[in-house]
Length: 155
Image (cartoon, rainbow, N blue to C red):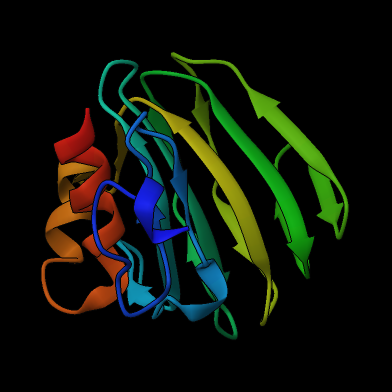
């Protein structure tokens, strides 16, 4: 299989194929602190042509994502735990789509909540501006972002 890889596999076993498709072994990536205390993330993919990031978020006890403004759509699938916000409570297996240009939140997360999130465009929350570059910079050290560097080089 290594003959079809564009780049050597990272320590996590993630890699990018010559056509730009990628395989990410998220279970082997380290969790990295996100823009909100008590919330960590794993960046799975970045598509700069659409200003889109795909990531996992994981919450510690009492974590809350403050109200945010989205320039683009936000898609959230609850893999485990619970998320509570003004539109209701979501539990494991629930999905919510929030169109761009809106303000949503705050999002209260139970301990151990894990979310699969697709963010179309930057987020603004409590003075923080979180976009693809912010997340890539947060992963500058370690193996957690090497597959993203390979994806960006392939594009």
